[in-house]
Image (cartoon, rainbow, N blue to C red; front, side, top):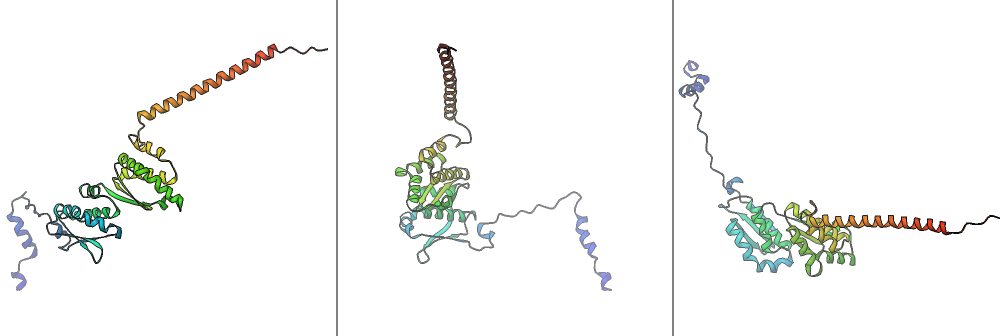
Length: 267
């Protein structure tokens, strides 16, 4: 008896469909965008950056220059943990983007590596910048005075070579003992790294600086390079022509000597 009174499941599903007019679509749901603290189920995310001992004093002097853009512009909480000797970063409820936390961590890490605040702050504004680090021993195993001379070739007199590579490749370079850190875009870092590796392997600064300073960085030949090749080929052709004329003159002189030389009288 109970089964006859209860509606069938098919009738329940079909009933609302019959009431709707044909061709009418249900309203599209509208979802509000999730906030940064809602993406991780409301959990606060942290980043910690270690502070080496030799960067305590620079960090203390430039603390407000680091704190202001991180807290006010990127909406990330930042503090210095003196006991753990680390800079701690934390997301807030009003953080506009969750990726700001990693950008701030990269910014603080770049400062700890030795970059100036003015240069490292570009990591907060541009997405295509990053820091690449390598050691001199990764390129060539050097010890003693050979290592000192390699470091001297990298920096140059008064940092002249390093500044020339930075200006030509639009990067920033930090030479910290045997470690080298490069800040820039992927393509510019590649050009700067190749130049530094050539210096480590023993190339003089004059030969390394000229290809870097040329427009196109070796990808397209410049006018000065074409002109240089033209004069070089001209000198080669002149030398070949001179050698040919010299050989002809020697042969003609030899023939004249044979004509002038008296013939032996046969008895």
